[in-house]
Length: 465
Image (tube, rainbow, N blue to C red):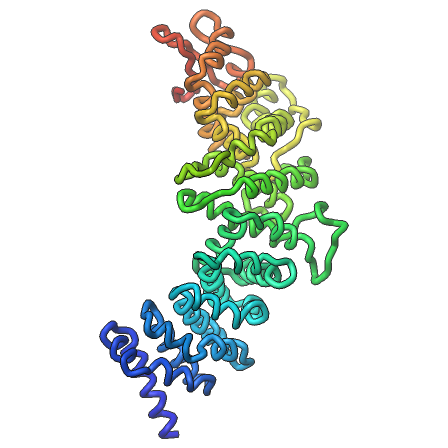
């Protein structure tokens, strides 16, 4: 017992030394890493202490990272991580150690990958613990970066070997949560920057309760699929400047949006915002939000030949969104106004309703972003006689927070720099003010500036475009 206590005390001192630059340097010169590595696997308290020391020693220390490789570290760690006695903390720290080693270069990444892919990575992904999931995502993201990373990424997205790992990671994050951003970076790389989104998304839909339902491929959506789209939407909205977006991804999202509209209930008005807890509704909403952000995304490198928004426009996005706006019942304030005018409830059975709070706003936001700086989209709106339809969206709506703000922005983008659209509204004028039924009924008016001859949309609250 005294020897065990003495060993633990020695390890504690080494751990404290490894936390300081001067101590880490001293331990490096004395070959501490190799000596500790050869003690693995050992008893549980010592294993955790040793792993923490090794993790610290390999944090940016090239000599220790190389020593880890030369002393068979990847194989040793594969055994440690696979031990039935390994706790969640042992697995988490062990993965952090491998992550520090993998940062040293291609040779180190390849060695770590070879020792653990696919079996050990799959086992760790199925452990269902947030800390382990975070560390695993960090390691996978590191191994799939740099020169040799593309080959490993292809293996990670292989249907038979790698995709089960990703499915298990997403399921762990869905059921148990995640704490760090490594999962977001990993799914960004796989889905947004590389061409594997639809492959991963469809795999999540085919598996249900451990069985495969190929004939139900697009008749339902799963919580896992909705969670993935929520993740991707979060990544795009929070750090658009750090992401390279592929046309393959946005066209895949458009496909999912279309499929979701085919199975969504547009009869029952939604009472909550996203996430609603209903997978099909959430898939519809998050795919729409991703389309909104994709239409606003700009390539910082200016290296792509066709921007994602241009691919979406070529695929008929504007026509699709306008059709949905046309099919929706009027905004709540308009419905109440119509009811007050007629003295009875407004019958809207033939119209679709918003399946979640914010659906109309999200539709308008997509159009608004598509219009920005694109005359051919502005012209398409006019040629489709959709200008009055868009003006109808410049109102407060109980079911669509910030609809008015998005509607006004869309109207601005519709008129800005487009003399034809401005003239379209001017031609409706009665002397100085235009009062079409669509506009005046909503408490709006379009005025013509006497000095410039340009039209401007004025809200009842005196907001101007």
